[in-house]
Length: 150
Image (cartoon, rainbow, N blue to C red; front, top):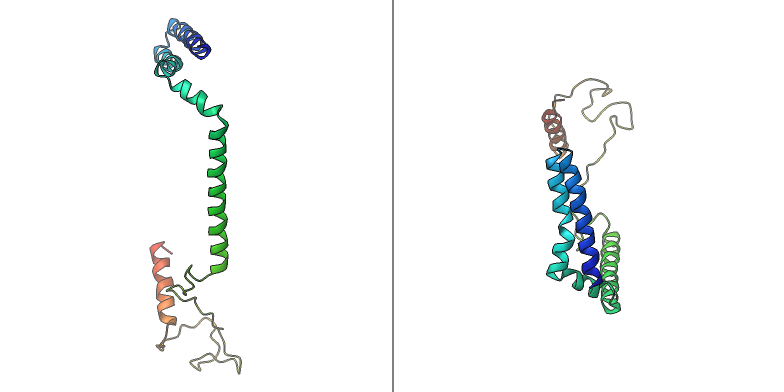
């Protein structure tokens, strides 16, 4: 019963503020304030406030929330540990479908010649075709650069 009285008092105060706002010819704001002011009375009339009181002040409900929180914590910890154990591989221990790119030096270790045998790799473009995944990697990079307008 005390809850209903408090809700009616809140609504009456809100409606008084709405009337003062309407007196200042701010009708849109007054309408919005009146809408907010009617919420406490509506909640009291529907009985939702009694349900909320039973929910908030019941220790069994709080124990249920604690159990749900513990369940969520255990789930999160198990997922984190599973991801750390799997590493860069998938969760089932399988290597992902895309292989990591290989880094090759610009010059071979001996004599300052590159793989094609044309001398230093400096700024010259290689014209010979190579087999392997190197061309695929460069074509992917070129496609990305073209997509971004570079």
